[in-house]
Length: 217
Image 1 (cartoon, rainbow, N blue to C red):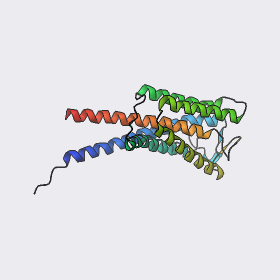
Image 2: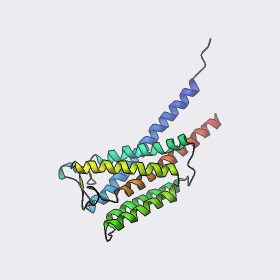
Image 3: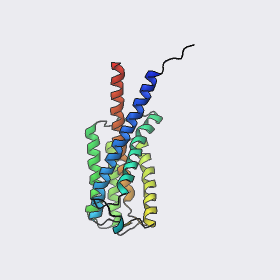
Image 4: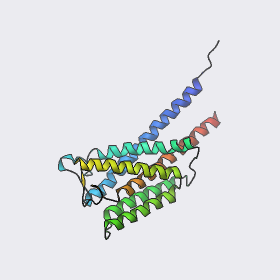
């Protein structure tokens, strides 16, 4: 009794795993880059303050911030297309790189506004950033799974930040909500939507490339 060849199957699995690693590395790199740039804005405006002994990078950021943000970005970017696949609801709204780049630009603008624009009070700033973040989701996502994941991950990230601040790892100037700034969940939500869109686009590109190879074979 002969055993059927598993060569093509193993090749497909290997390609998928390789592509998954590549996508994860790309998402990690994007997350590290955005963390360095956006945290620079926060530090320059004294929104976040790190103890002098942990300042160790050229962008005046604690060394652990970019790797943590990169890891979170990779997890989010890989999770979004996975959830879409599990739910059987492929995300097809504005699936092109130009839309993704605009989403990144809007996210950077929201973060820039939180650090640079002076509002009358924190409530006005928080409401403005909340509206901008929801507008970002509506403009570039509009999926229920995207909104739900964005809210859940933003709340978890906010809780983690509160624990770090409580333990003295760093601090916010003028905290107005349990050791942090009240607008922080809005920034996290916008970041989750942005990385989710990047992850979806990378997964879509991979699917198209794999389909092309299948047709050629």
